[in-house]
Length: 183
Image (cartoon, rainbow, N blue to C red):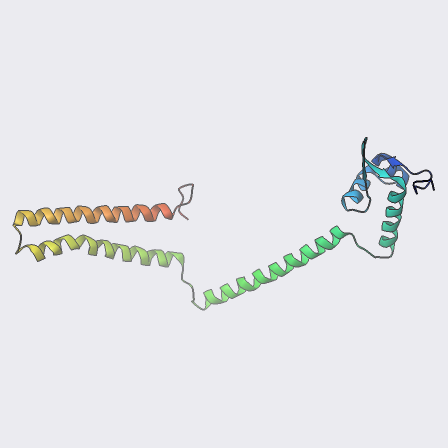
């Protein structure tokens, strides 16, 4: 050891030298570095490997690997993600089974059936709304001049049509996505 506590022969080396020293590819050294197995140090020439700590880390990594200890952190993280994905899959399969059971039991109705029901309802509603001006005219006919009664009826019909048109336009606009296709 020298006066700084470094083993003689130590120093900072490029990835190619470390790969050659360990008998592996440059890519493998880079992978081990990304996994946190091999430490690097920032030098004036760029990122380099301090020889002694690098050798010690690599020997510890190989020893742990040989004895099945200390699986890499990345491997543990991947295993944890796999378990979470399996749990989510099981939950979604359970939810799908529940929905199929409820559909079979008749708790849900088809979109087509709902669309037909709404269509019938709005046709009935439109007929009802369009009949209001005539009914109002009948009610006021004894109190107002017939010409004025007809003018009021026409005005009310125009207003009802305008409101129904605005209602339909608002409903169609909200039921379409950005491409103009119905949802």
